[in-house]
Image (cartoon, rainbow over all chains, first blue to last red):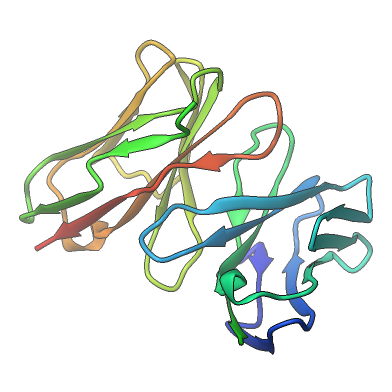
Length: 112
Length: 112
């Protein structure tokens, strides 16, 4: 039972354009959502998060949007840079345990 | 603070042998999580500790797996009688009062 899904295995964008990564979840008990970036042979690096009481959170070039009625969140990267090329994971948690449930990841390639 | 550290970074072992991994969390973090990641998948939750208490174990954690956090600081994950299916990246993460988890670089286990 995949509670968190990233349906696009890969995404390719031109440098300077917007990258939009999507994520869907099924469990209504999730109340905190996070995005991580991962390079090969390294652990995931925390990027940005959002609480279920908000619908948008912004940090520099990264913005996360949450649509609770659709159980959908997205990560926008503007402008995209070649250094953003990596695997991006969305994750969800409920506040009682804090354990993270991850999606399968989306590989982003930003072309110069 | 140097972040979350894990040792060893790589471990190659023969089927049937026991292995032990260590995780040193960020010093003021009271929660510590273990995850496992296989190729093409997101990290999967294994277990977590609040201080020295192990509060939840995933059904993925068979009887051959055991984890400890004896003094509420570092943690160890032991796998007994390793099987080829145990080959994966084992990730440790820690968190304090916030929900964001910070990951170590992982231990890559290869069972031959």
